[in-house]
Image (tube, rainbow, N blue to C red; front, top):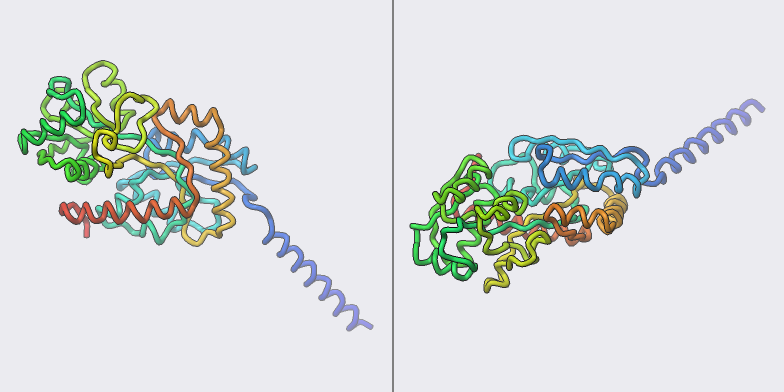
Amino acid sequence: MKTRFTTALIGALIGTALFSGAATAQAPFPARPVKIIVPYTPGASADMIARLISNELANDLGQPIVVENKAGAASIIGTSFVAKAPADGYTVMMALNTHVITPASRKAPYDPIADFAPIGQIATGQMMVLVNPSVPATTFPQLVDYLRKRGDGATYSTPGVGSTTHLYTLALQEAIGTNMRHIPANGMNVAVMDVMQNSSTMLIGPVESARTHIASGRLRALAQTGKQPSPLFPNVPTVERSGYPDVNLSIWVGMYAPAGTPRPIIDRLNRALRTVVGNAAIRESLSEKGYDPALSSPDEFAALNRREFALWSQLIQKNGLRTND
């Protein structure tokens, strides 16, 4: 009798444990707060977008969203943190396309493709081709003609060797057939000042860095480097529409999870992003800051990462810009 009672009790306890485990395993994601790591300083583009969407994202997911900056070493510190985080969807990353540029140009303790599960692209931002108003060109084709005639007498400024602006200008030079000399500066503000003071011919710079100077007349915008014009400058043509259809040098922002995150969790986060960025108020806020919503599926975003990592790796190797190997 005692044996039968003990056996029944053990069976009941096992059944309860199995039921409890099954219920836990089937608990819908997310069941607790989600942390978005931004591997840049506060105020950077990815940080601004993460904070812009965090409240609406929390409403959609039904859990708080915590945005945390982990800047340093050209975004490597924060990115490494996410690469090593548990693959459960509770630690994700908001990053620019420097995610694939930085490890192409320097040694990093992670693989930007293999160590991450792309969730989706969120937005794109444009870069501007900027010159001092004294440059004798009012259109991009006129600028190309001027640069070709000047040869290495023409110069371009960047925030530094290997920066995104440097790489974009190298790619543009290849497309338009010019031979400008590089004048690296100590940061974007100094690079912009070099062009405004006419000590450098041109600069490729982000819309948000240039808009005030364009409005004041201290810089002239001749083209935008992405496929679509920025909503802030709808009348400035793209390089593509100026006769160079293969040029697409925009900034993009997207969300990543650690590799191995279950696909249902990736899909849930992607659906939340689509809902939030589809919100009219969010789209308007992005436009006011110079960004266009650019939603993609996880697979589309993964393909974009693979394609651009290969592109920038090849350009960096060709120009001998790989460091820290």
